[in-house]
Length: 168
Image: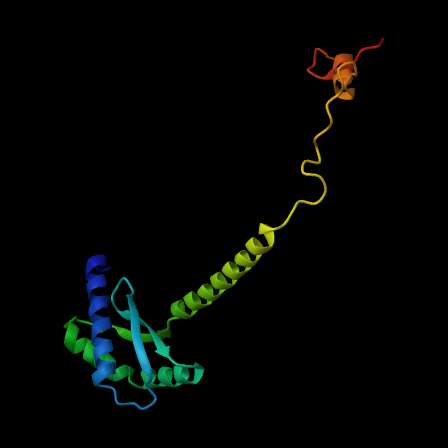
């Protein structure tokens, strides 16, 4: 197992080499606007997974994936020359879904904000249904006894903490 710092440095170097080789060295017409977003290495530095994004629709993504697969040998040899490691890692290309997922989340957040704004607009002039306070009771007059206070006077706490009515 390699040192994690060394693996990170090697991953950064592989990302730079693959990106520059794709820009200058690969002349495949199927290759669209590809951006190498990340490279991850296995702990033994034998396998490298290259994450990439493609600007365009699904057909551009598929064509670029085919172009990357056909240029895998060239890219691996360039990585081997540039890094100087004993064993050049094999390259596996994976389309990075993170930007697409982030864009989808942005759309969902904007829809939620629109709904919140609509509800705030509706709520601004809204009045509660019924009375302002449906639980408010009128106070008893000076000589009247409230029903609840009458029940409180008739009940007492028994030895178990419960209430029992007094027999009167």
